[in-house]
Length: 108
Length: 118
Image (cartoon, rainbow over all chains, first blue to last red; front, side, top):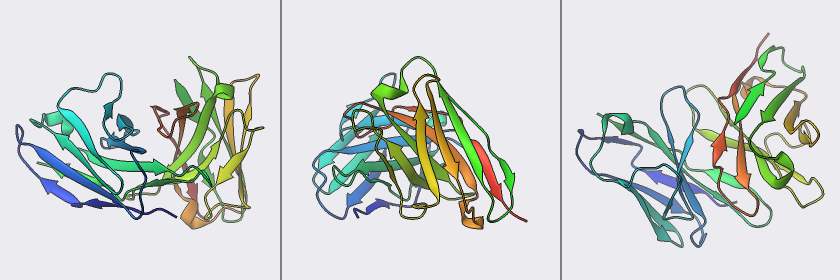
């Protein structure tokens, strides 16, 4: 089973600053990685898929990069609504198992 | 849009069936997934049912043999039948869609809460 490790667990920043979130896979997953945002009490929302593609309607301040085992989600110029928990996720080809990282909380 | 229902309070060892009604797309052409989130915890994959694979469904080891995912194409609805429920199954259960052939989940329901307690 592929394990995704996110760091840091908590990121304390101010509005306008840049957030850099990391996700490391226990083995290579090429670019098959997605990022989600979850605001308090809400369902997760897809931000990035295939490591670097923004989902529909996602602002340009969100960007993803990486391949293999190391991935990064960058948020340039934090807006108040960006303070939330972020998860990375992958799915193996066979068996088709999904795994999520433990999450990074971006707090003020 | 995805709308879950069927959550509630159930005793340990009991059963519950969750539903997820889809609109705006067809579940038969999508990869439909259940994800749960225990109170104060992260996201945990529960199961995925794939289109084009004879309705093959795959389940996490933590629920294998107790939970079963299925779909009714005529109702455009996904189900999760949960048996032998345990306290550690207490969570909000989300259904989510992945486009055919993809590895992402691009639409999520609002979730339904399941509490297993005596």
